[in-house]
Length: 145
Image (tube, rainbow, N blue to C red; front, side, top):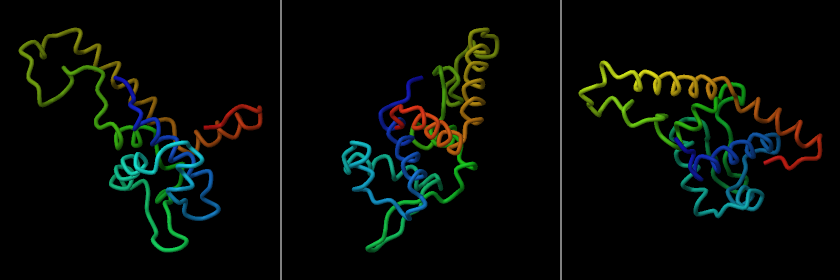
């Protein structure tokens, strides 16, 4: 399993939007400029996050993107799943694939444990936690996102 550029940019996008939520909706142009991501690529990141019910959009002069839910209620698992699809460390965990050894395969059971551990970890990290970590990094003089 490898998180793609889309997944990484999506996380940065959500952190940016959450950091600037007090100023209202965040425009695509502002996001692109702050994050160094093209507007065209941001469309590919924003749309799945909207479809997943994480982001909303307002139109007009003060339009832009905003979080639909509180940062405490958005987990990294939701973000990664919205952008990358279902999390699987091995193809043999895919329910649509049938392996004749799946019922007795010890390796498959281990991959399932690893997969569950990763999901549990991502489920335990909220967007609010990421904002807290960014704040600590900024206080320490480190680059934030």
